[in-house]
Image (cartoon, rainbow, N blue to C red; front, side, top):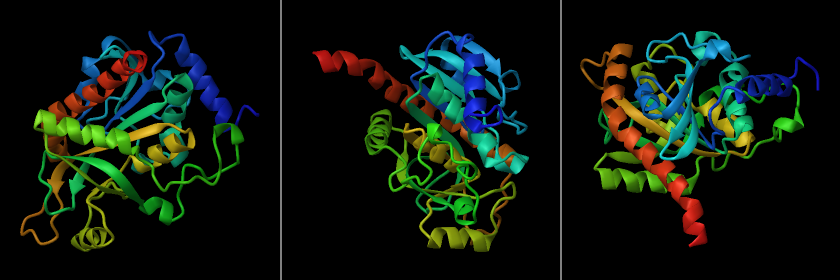
Length: 288
C-alpha cells in the first residue's frame, strides 16, 4: 500500500480523528441542504471542521456547514456530517465519498443519509419525506463512479452488487415511525443529476418516464461507497419543491430549498432519533 493509495489516505484521516472523538460511532449520519440542525441535538459533542481532517473536501455551499459532530444520540455513539461536498463543486466522486470510508473505519456500520430533493411524483408535496427504496445513477450510467481507479481489495470488491442498496428493514422502520409521528413519508426512487442547474421541463418529463419519484444532486455516490464498505444504508429525502413540467410558473431557488428543508427537518430528526433509539434498545432486547 503506497502513501498515494486511497486506503492509505483513509487510514490517515481515521488516525487523525480517532484521538479527537469522544465516542466510537456506530452510526454515521450525513445531513443534506438545510438539514444541519439535527447535529445540534448530539449530546456531549466534539465539533471538527472538515478543513482540519486530512483529505476531507471542504463544503462551499450555503446550508452545508462543513463540520463533523461526534457524540451520542439516544445513548448511541454517532458521527454526524453537518453538510457534504458535491460533484458540482469541482470535487471528484472519490473525494466527495471519502468521508463515508472514514466513518466506517471509525466504527460506523450503519449510514443514515439525507438530502433535499425535487418531487417528481405528482402525489408528493413540499415538506414530505421520501424513504429511498432504489435510485437511478445517471452519473454512473454516463461513466462516472467513485469506484473508478486502481483496485484496492482492502476497500471492497470492485464489481459491486447494487440490486438492493437501501436496507429494507430500516426503511420499513422509518415509514412506521412516520405514521406514528404523523409525518408524511413515502417510499420512492431517487434520481441523481450532476447539477448545479435545476432540470428543464423536458428533463423532468424524462425522469418521470424512467421511474424517478424525486431528483437531487447528491447521495448516490455516497451510497455506492457505503455498500462497498458493507454498511447498512437508510436514505431519506426531504421534498423541497414540486418539479412540475406543466406549471405556469416553476421557478425554484436554493433559498426556497433551504427554507422548506429547515421546516421539514423537525419530522426528519424525530424519525432519525427513533431509528437510533431502536439500536440502543436492541442489545437488551436480545438478552431478555
